[in-house]
Length: 542
Image 1 (cartoon, rainbow, N blue to C red):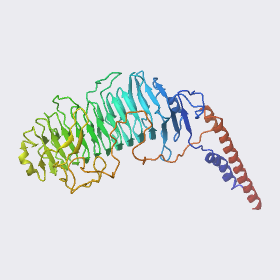
Image 2: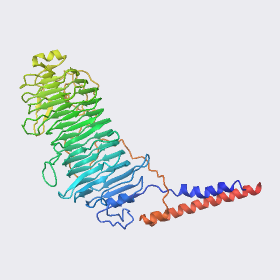
Image 3: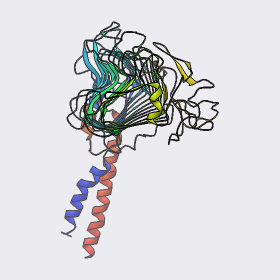
Image 4: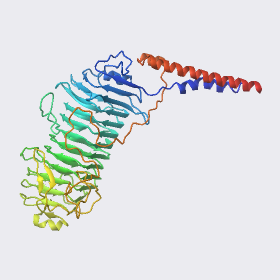
């Protein structure tokens, strides 16, 4: 009997703890709500910032349609708790139009996820309140973050950064439109824990950075507001099916190792188009044009820059590059760094229609151009390697490459271009076989007798292999959906800590939750009673 008493007493304490653990809750906020309400759909809270402080790991906060003014530091900033594997914390907008988080009073940010993990934020609009000062959209500068999904967000007219992070691992930015941010759409300062790692940016629109600041058209005090710009990071970074245009700085500037950019349009950015700094980086199936964004000012910027301070390999495959301004290199490789790297360029069109715009490759770089088409009608030289220069007549010395007019449908400079190939283009069927199954439109490669050079295959496309990037800007407030089913599902919720009834009452969790907890406690007591009774019977027999 005595030997069974400790077990019975242990069960008295353990069974209620196991059975009383509540499932994650779903809460609601609405512009017409009240923070004294229980946070249900019928009786929602009013303040999103306060609501996030009442959440526990794994909870869901539904922000109902309407406009929410964020002005008080830091009470109005949304600071959700971390979730964990199998119990993601979710904030999601709901309604026929995205709920609007509108900042003012120079508020630091709308959402701060510093130091958090397992967070999903979906279907929200974040902007300034009618031009009021408002700094960042989403921020993570106060500590490393991990396992974050940002989906279907519309962030615009922000004084500084749309998304501002230093150290992040496993970040997915899906189907987001981030425009008119004074300092840049996506980026952040140098991290202390590896910077950006395992990041996917897909089906996004990053545009007009620097064209807004504190209620006006800009420029902002920051001289190079990029569409995407990060400091040295471990990577990998993948940017896919994304439009990056009309930014006052660079289009895509990645200092991360193993950056993979594919199926993107980088158009009409004032400064550099695509910059690759980290070894192991690859640029594929991408269109780059319009450097200068309509300005004929001669600048030191280039459509493509490869600049690495460490040895490594870089690849450019199936890319179309067109430049109108001239006066600088259409691509320069290791211009500032005397570090040996390897560069392979295949099936790429270089069209430098402006004066004096050849390609520069530093001497010592191991490079190979294979089945590339060069068109430099106003440049004396096509390529400069150290002090050695290659004229159009010297192109055959580079291997299987040639010169000629690519015959685009329509070039663009400050406006949209159409870089499909017209019939008779020398780029048609002239490429080398590569392991790329589709072009920038998502059409199968090859279409004819061989691979076409550049980002597009010619011919009629009746069946797309992959979803092409959308041609329209997603700068709206509708509840848009991603162009493909979301592969990163929110795992089933779990919870790792028991919340007492008293805690729930204090946090305004409502009478329903209280009654459910009471029922669980009664059932626990009944089970313990049965266990004790069986134990006593067994003891008497002994």
